[in-house]
Amino acid sequence: MLQAHSFLWNYLWVAPNVLLILFGFLLWRRDRTQKFRAFLVFAFLSSLGDLAAYLADIIPSVTPTTFWRVIWVGLIVESILKFLVIGEVFSHLLNPYPAIARLGKNLLTGFGTILVLVAAVVAAFARPDSKFDIIFDAHIVEQTVFLVETGLIIFLFIFAAHFHLGWERLSFGILLGLGISSCVHLATWAIIANTNPSEHMRMVFAFLNMGAYHISVLTWFYYLLVPGRVRVKPGGLPPSADILAVWNRELERLLQQ
Amino acid sequence: MTFAIILVLFAVVTLILLLRITVTRSLQLSSSNPSPKIEPIDIEAFRNLIDVAESEYLYHRLPAAEFRRVQRERLRAAAAYIRVAGHNASVLVTIGQAALASPDMQTAEAARQLIDRGLLLRRNATVALLRIYLAMAWPQASLAASPVLNGYERLSSSAMLLGRLQNPAVPVRISVRP
Image (cartoon, rainbow over all chains, first blue to last red; front, side, top):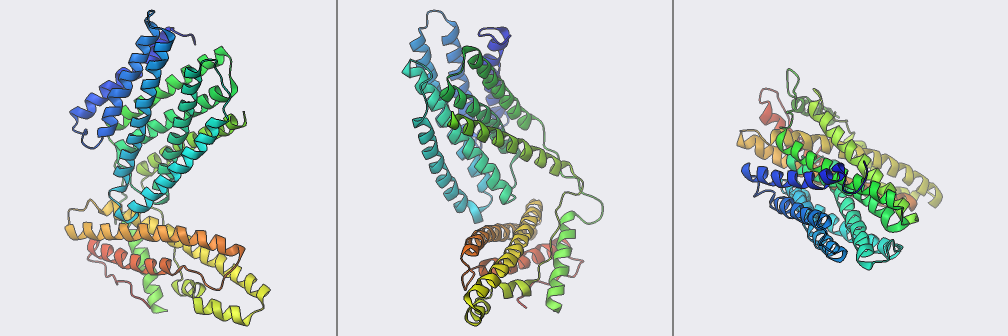
C-alpha cells in the first residue's frame, strides 16, 4: 500500500489540496477574507503549487529536472506565505492587547533571528543525500523552513499561554494545523537531509508528511465549521465575581492591618 | 546524525506541547468551574523584602558571607511573592477577558484597563523573576522589584472597579496604598 502512485498516494497528494481550495472558498463565503487574507492566499497558491507538482509527477513527458523546478517554485512561494500566515495570526493575537504588543513583536523578531541562525548552522553541517544538487538543496531548504516555522509556532503558543491571552477560534486552529504539519515535516526532513535513508524509508516519510498535511487541512475545517463551546457558568454569582470577592476580602484584611 | 536526532526530538516535544495546549484549552472551555483561584499576598511582608533601605541596612550590619546567605533567603521569598503576584495577574486577565463583551460601556472599559494592567504586571513579574534568579548567584544590596509591587496595587484598583461595576449591590472598597 505504501507505494508511489498507489491509490493512497494519489489520494493523499490530491485530496488535501482540493479540500484546501474548498476551504478558501468557504472562508470567502463567510466574509472572513479581510481578517485572514494571508491564509486565503496561502490556501489557493500552495494548493495550486502542490497540484502542479502532482501533475508534473504523473505526466510522463515532464523531465525530472522540470519536476524539481516545479517543486522549488512551490517550496519558495509556500514558505513565504506560511511566514506571512504566522505573522497574520500573531497580529490577531496581539491586537487586542496593546500593553504587550511591542514586547511580543520584539521577542518574536529576536527569537526568529536566533532560529534562522540555528537553522543555517544545521544546514551547513548536513550531508548530501543525493548526487543531484537540485534535490539535496530542496531537502535542506525544507529542513530550514520547517525548523524556523516550528520554532515560531511553539513560541506563539507559549507566549499566549504565559500571558493567558485569549485566542480567536480560527486563528488558534490555523496555527495548530500549521504546527502539526511542520513538526512532522521537520522530523522527516531532518532524517532525510542528515542520514541518507533507504528508498523504502523515504517512501514511508513521504506518506507520513502527506498524512500530516491532510490532518492539518481537516483541523482547519474543524475550527472553521464547528462552533466553539461557550464556557458553562455555575449557578449563583459568576466565577469572576467570586474571585473579585476574594480579592476584595484580601484587600480589606490588608487595610485593617 | 546528531543534528537529525536533536531536530527529531525538538519536533516530537513541540508536537506533544501543541497537543497538550489544545487538550488543556478544550478542557477549560468545557469545565463547569474553570476559574483558577486568587492566592493571597501579604503586601507588607513583600514590601519589606524588596525594600532597598532594609537591604542596605543588612549589607552594612552583617558580615559579607552572612549578608549573602540572608539576602539569598530574602530573594527566594521575594521570588515566591512575585510568582503569586504573576499568577493573580493572570487570573484577573482571564476575568477581564470574560467581562470585555459586557454591553455596558463602563464595565467593558474597566475590563480593558484590568487586562492591560494585569498583562503589564505579568510582564514585570517575569522580568523581576529573571533578575532575582540572576541576583541569587551574586546577591546585591538592592532588588528592583518595586514595579511589581506598584503594578500589583494598580491592578487591585482596576479589579475593584470592575467588581463594583459587575456587582453594584456588593460593597467594595477601592485599593489604596496602606
